[in-house]
Length: 381
Ligand code: CMC
Image (cartoon, rainbow, N blue to C red; front, side, top):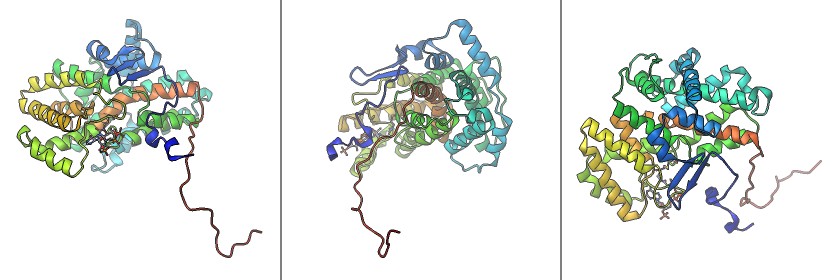
């Protein structure tokens, strides 16, 4: 094997087929089960997109009502999860908190410890588990933020749909429809993106015939990194460093001289721009107008213009979603957990797809360590 056979980072390697989403970097398009993501974001509630990812078709009215009823039944923070979160230090990273919470849910579902191929790990059982996880995650994320702010839990409201209830549980007040709409769009845009690092991680774990929760916990670990999901949080750190549009040029000069990576820009697959950005940018603009914060838009546009003109590297979804979540009032550390709440739908769809036509994922490596050598004095018996 030569160095040229090695595809570092699996770049450009096609590992399997998937019917869940299609990324086309040539046309800047992303399809969920055939539907362009921007059409879904403009017309659907997140619940319908979750159903689509899991089942392959958009729900009928009756199916949507059924999913919503099930989601409402499982939206309250499970008592065991609350107790586990309260054992954690307030300084624990929210990603670690959510990872722990999912682990607790998994351990409490004793039948769920079964392999994805056992009867208890059947497609029906795993779909039901996926719905329950997706239903519980908003309460986990919302409570995490409130706890760090020294605030008590806000119980879910049955009269609100997923996005509105998520905001209610986080802030304890009913959100304006402009905010609910922007948040709903962001949840849809984050839901699925083919074989990204965290989804691939979930598929690797599933391929060993482990269980659904273990695969999701592992995926959360992969998502945490700033080269992946952690970038939406990192974008806000950059905005805070820069301060205002007028500081962009000197800040960027220094950052590029030090070869810093500018978070929220670049993508392994899209080289001409991320298909999800225009939709999220429009949602951000609606929030900027709603909150009367034009300076956020100026900083956003100036950094984008300057960076793209110098490097020819375009923004990814995390670039508009970071400031959007900030405007809504989420703490910066809560941004990547929001990504989990959405992406759990895509992860679990992939876990079920992997289980349905499984092959153990086990690539090869090219050894470049020391030549064979021996322990001095050792004599084989
Ligand atoms: N800032 C500065 N330079 C960059 C950036 C960036 N954001 N992205 C790529 N480059 C440069 C990089 O330094 C390298 O330059 P050179 O060839 O001179 O060494 C070249 O472009 C290729 O970069 P790479 O990192 O080898 O390319 P990749 O395809 O492995 O990178 C990436 C993809 C997402 C890891 C990278 O663009 C990056 O680190 N971006 C910042 C983090 C980020 O925003 N991540 C979110 C990704 S999208 C959401 C998600 O999937 O979670």
